[in-house]
Image (cartoon, rainbow, N blue to C red; front, side, top):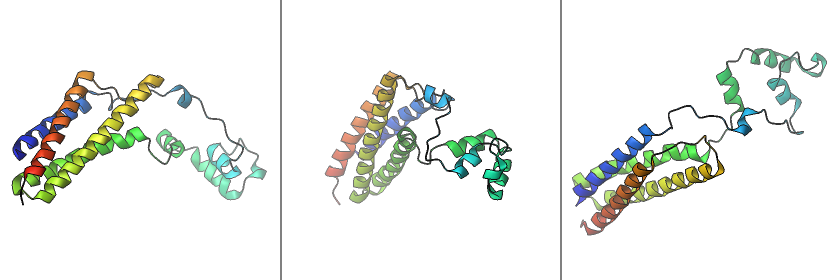
Amino acid sequence: MAIVALVFWLFTAGAGFYLLVTSSLGRARPTGPAEATEPATPASVTATQTAAATPATAIAPATLSRRERRRAARARWDPPSLAASRKAPMMPEAGSVLEFAHPACAIIGLAFWLGFTLVHNRTLGWIAFGLVAVTACLGLTWFTVNVLAAKRGDRSGPYFAGRLMVLHGCAAAVTIALAALTALATRG
């Protein structure tokens, strides 16, 4: 029964991989209307942050310290990617975390299940079952985040084919059921 669960797990992983390959994740994401315009500068921004964001000629030289003038002079030569990364938020969005965590947990769980299939150690089976349960929760959360973003009209998120998602979800449900039954039935 562990081999049947392993085959279903591999089928689920294959369907998930195909979903990722055929989705819009690898393509450039269009910027939303909020990202297209420069945000208003709040009143709490310090002179140092303003000096770093604007060229040295825009601010009166008497108001800047020597260090701030040098920093502003160097900033004008920064490539666009560096300037964009400085403006990017420090913490990734939930979708980005889920894009990584869902496949990562699935692959690690698959490795534990392969170990369980070869050795029949009950601990490995329960670790794999826990990881497949976490993976399912992450996948459902990712699905919910994408559905809510689509309802808001946010086109920056990935697009997945509906039939493939249903196939992937059904295979994952069968995998979870088989993993639980196999881990429960194993002695040792």
